[in-house]
Amino acid sequence: MSQQSLKRKWALCLLLCWGIVAAYAQKDLERLHKFTITEFYEDQQATTATSEEYKDVDGSGSLMAIIKFMSADPTVKIDNMEAFMFNFGNMNHKTVLHGDELWIYVQKNARTVTISREGYAPIKKYDLRTTIKEGATYVMKITFDKVTWNVERSLNKQFLQLQLEPGLSNAVVTLTREGEREPMETSTTDATGSVAWNLEFGTYFYGIKVPNYVEASGRVKLTTSDSTYVEKVKLTPNFGYLEIQDPGNASGAKVFVNNKEVGSVPYKSDVKWDCGTYQLLLVKDLYKSHTEEFTIKQGETTVIKPVLESNFAETTLTVEGGADIYIDGIRKGAGRWAGPLKAGTYLVECRKANHRKTQKEIHVEVDVASTITLDPPIPITG
Image (cartoon, rainbow, N blue to C red; front, side):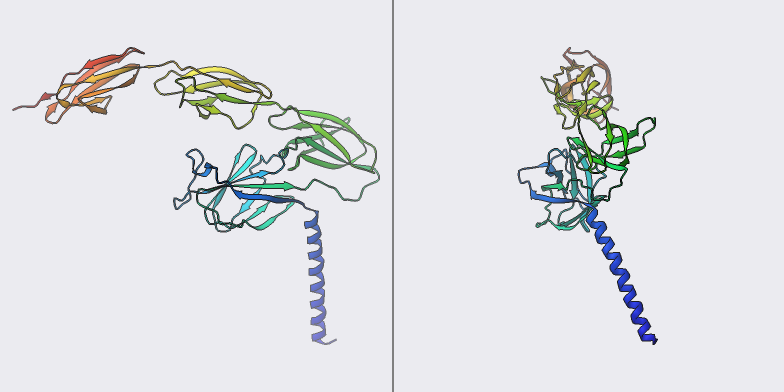
C-alpha cells in the first residue's frame, strides 16, 4: 500500500469520527429543553432606569439601560438570579433579582445577546433589532418548552413526575422510599415547576419546600411501566404584603423589619412576605423611634399608619452685631437662626472677627418653643 493511499484512509477515518461526534452532539442538543424569546421591546412610558431608586451608571458615567427579563406565562416564575447567563459581547452588564423578574443592567449600544441556562439549548447572538439606548427601559419575555421524557422504559421501573401548581422553579423536593428514614433523592424543580425520576416499583413519600408557600407532602405508588405517573401538587400560598402609609408626620422615616432596613415611608412591598409576626422599627430625625409588632396574613396586605412622637422643639437664637452662631461647633447662621432642635442640651457660641467669642449652654425640651438672646462677642482692644 502506497503512503498516499494510507494518508487517504487516515483522512477518511478522521472524517468519519468527526461525523459521529457531531451526530451525538446534535442528539444531545436535541434532548435539551428549549426556551424562546417571545417579545422584546422598549417600554417608552417607564422611567425605571432613570429613577433615583433604581438607576445605575457605567464606568464612563453613562446611565445603564434596564432589561426586565420575565416569563410570558404568569404561572412560571423567574426568581433565581443564578439560573440564566447573559452575554452582550463587549458591553458590561449585571443582573439583579426584582420580585419575579430579572433586571439586567446593560451598557448603551448593545445590539445582540446570548442567553444560556443549564439543561437548555442556548439562544446565541439574538438580534435585538435595535441599539440599546442610555437610560432606557426594555421588556423581554420568554417561554419554556414543557418537560417531556422520551426514553426506553424498564419492565420494573416507572417515571414519576411532580408538577407544581403554580409552576415555581427551584422548589426543593425530597423523595423517600417507604420503610426508609432518609430521603433517597433531593432535587429542585425546573423553570416549569416540574421534577421527575425513573424509579423502581413501590411506594414513595415526597416533601416540597418553597419560599412563601406552605410545605407540601404526599404519597404515591408506582406499579406500571406503561406510562408516566404525574402527581399534580397544588401549593397553598403562605404570604401577604406590607404597606406603611403616612398619616401626617412619618414621611421619610426609615423602615426596619426584624432589624433589617427595607425602605422608607411611604412603603409598599413588591415582594411576598411569609405569613407570621414581625417587629417594625421606624427611625426619623427629630422624632422618637417608633416600634410595633405586626402580623402578615395569607393573601392580605397589612396596612400600618404610624404616628410618630416628636422629639424636638422650635428654637430661635438671636445675637446683636451680626455675629456667627454655632451650635455644638456647627455654624447655623449670622445674627439670627430659627429651626427645630432635638430635645437635649447644646453649647451655643457666637463668633466674630477681632472679637472674643461668647458661649451659652441651652436646654431644649420637647414641644416647648423658645426664643433665646445670646451675648454678643467682646471686641478685642488695645
